Image (cartoon, rainbow, N blue to C red; front, top):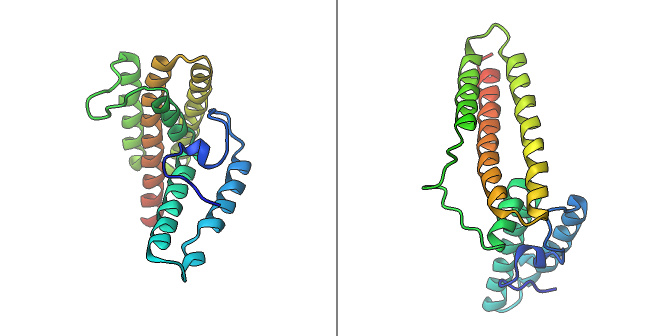
Length: 179
């Protein structure tokens, strides 16, 4: 089984280029491909074949990481559709969203001062997860209907919630370590 480095990530796994993926199916295909191109299987092969196996394994790993993440998958689909992302220069200018960002950051910063920071942090994380789920529904609909500009804006906003969730998880670990 060979994987071409010129294939897009959906083609690598033999899947339709669609936001809706069966993650279990993706994972099974990933395991099959990893077995087929695992560098250990090429231990007695030529240097060129060993290098190709390593490159293919790396490509499969990257493809899997992108496709299993809804955010990365949405972004990748938009890139395949010709949408450009310049994260350094492009940020959302939606004043409501910017205000929400500030309020959430303030709430997270205030958690350390609370008597029961874990409960408040859990509540914040649950709220962020709900917002992410709602955004993913919107993104899914926009990608399905080829409304790529709107999907791009939602993906940029979703990236913020992903970062916020990571900050919450790190804070949770810091609080647990401080006990």
